[in-house]
Image 1 (spheres, rainbow, N blue to C red):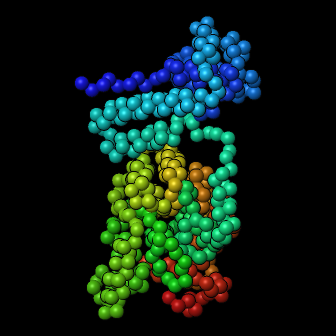
Image 2 (cartoon, rainbow, N blue to C red):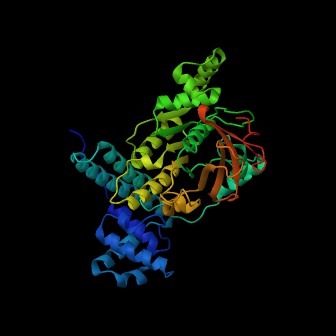
Image 3 (cartoon, rainbow, N blue to C red):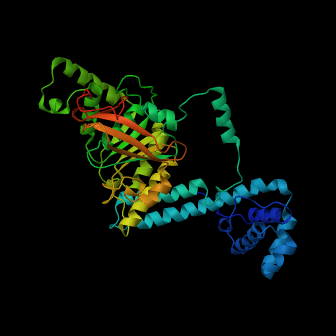
Length: 434
């Protein structure tokens, strides 16, 4: 017969942790809910209140605030505590058992949800993953005194190997120099009116981060990533990317009217696109919760560092109203970035946004301004007189020039964008070689 399961509590470990607090050192990672016994929870609540108020923690201060039974437990805790050196060992036991109990509860709740046929399996899996993430992160055990080690390590590395781009190279030179590239754990949101080329820019940027060179002079690395494409099929994405890379008309590809040289360029470009370390999904039923599950898997299995979501408005998150839905999507995209990837999101404008060009024009902008690290607008250039001119404007950036404007030109038939290095003021339709 199999051995009976071990009990998910340890009375002695809880008492020793309390004893360590009473004789001089309070655990920084444990909260009242991490203790199994209610009496221990009550005692720990009082200990944390005293510590938060800057008051001494000892038998004299804790005893009067608890009942007679708890006072006996206090004395017992002090008597069995070997020394303060025991704290780290016993607090790890209490913390581990607390997470195991939480895991049992999560699994139980998930099992109950599974029998509810009115909920989709993807929704159940997504919610299950979100709750599991809380257990993995420690259930309230993340707050701690600041440790400068990571900052110092990056600072010393930068001194030893100076470079202009310290994040992921996006392939847009001006952007990479000014903002240092795309950064892990950050959200980049690109917004604009329809037909401005937002999806073209986002997908091209993702492929450039994967090392695909679309124009001369690009400095690129080859970094794996994922594209969640809900506006077009994977086939359309591949074809458009190959057209952009080969600089051939998408219409010619669809009608079979490519010349000989164009055929060679297109097939060669398609090979380069599919060889890139890019993972693509064209499912249309993604929610932020299920995207988070898939991104976590791809980080572990494929080492991805960036994610493109095209676009946020097509995510199938459900909420009681539109505002809650926008808040949920914004916050969860931020959570996905915190897994350790750069997240590039395509967004549209609200109803008044076509006339009001600014942060408030972005749909759900109030929450997005909190959760977005870089906000970009892709818009028609105000000067130059050519319908194919674009301006990529940095509207919001935490550590960069917010007034930055990058001139671009769009080749609509080839589904690509390139930097424009000329002066917008001097441009005219006749002067631009499109």
